[in-house]
Image (cartoon, rainbow, N blue to C red; front, side, top):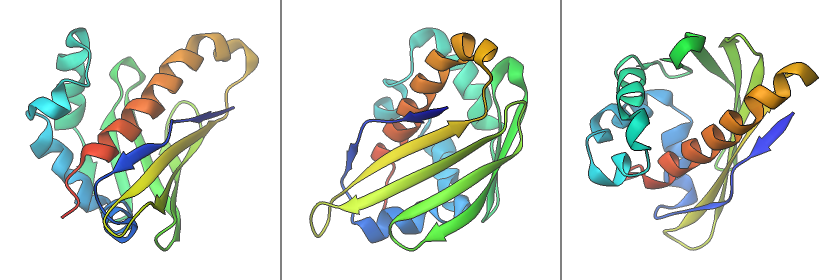
Length: 152
């Protein structure tokens, strides 16, 4: 089952966005940005503590990212394909539900671009009702977060 974010404008070139998301150690800036008002205002008030714990538990290498996902536990993803300046594809390596995720980027100007995040989760019909809304919200929030990261 696929879930796609809306298309998000980014105040950075396509090359800058690709460079940031194709090396996951660059995303450690999420930990630094967590206390920024622009970042936190996108998180529902009742979820701030949960998200803070998840952000603190994030671990990054060039090709992998692991994080705590509330009651689900530790989730890990690994980059499985890089299409320079266009797309970075990930696959879950530790997750109760196998999934793939990709981040697509396109230029909109010399110093601007747009991104879209897609997740394809292997969900059976019984789990769909329970997981559909959180996955839709999660992919949208992830795209929001990517749109506000500093790319310079």
